[in-house]
Image 1 (cartoon, rainbow, N blue to C red):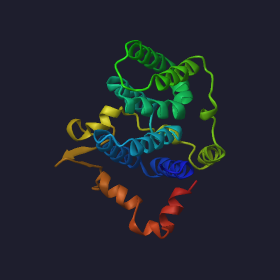
Image 2 (cartoon, helix red, strand yellow):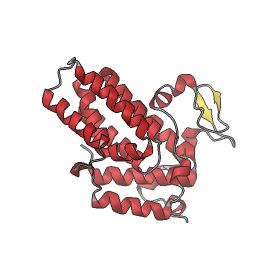
Image 3 (cartoon, rainbow, N blue to C red):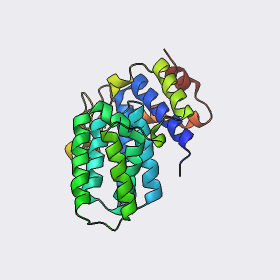
Image 4 (cartoon, rainbow, N blue to C red):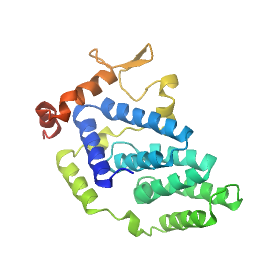
Length: 237
């Protein structure tokens, strides 16, 4: 699995780029993440899926995406409610449950009701112990009881404090889309990119650069060896 400090640092980098260089950076990154998730989900690759869910939770924690995306993904898991879905639910709720409660408590109540309805009629091969654990978790969220697994690690806390200093406007650049928006963007369009237009299945930004081109500019090959221009832009106040 992905090393947690590395996932936190990468998510913080994406949050900075999204605020400093434009919303299309975070949008393109999340779009690719959703595509990878769909491919792994079709193949039931639990290890990769857990990594992607935890990384998405970090993006949410750092204000790159809005809670509506996380809630929509949770509804996807509840809809099929296989043993794999339950494990992904547990990973997402343990990472982001308290923040979801703060951001939209009404939506959390709806999610709790959906889970209660699903668990009332046994329809899954998941061990009862995992279901009971998930129920305990959502009841703790409902009653605002924070579990030990939800407390911030030292690395998460220090990274969040750093982001507040170098990236104070992150919430203003949140990607406010649902999971279904990202998954179906090739069919329904990328309405969240202001001024974008369709041409041959690609999104074009005013000024002539496509989203893909902007991402290539922000993540050049030379960055692996140390791109001073990008580093300067990233840490610019």
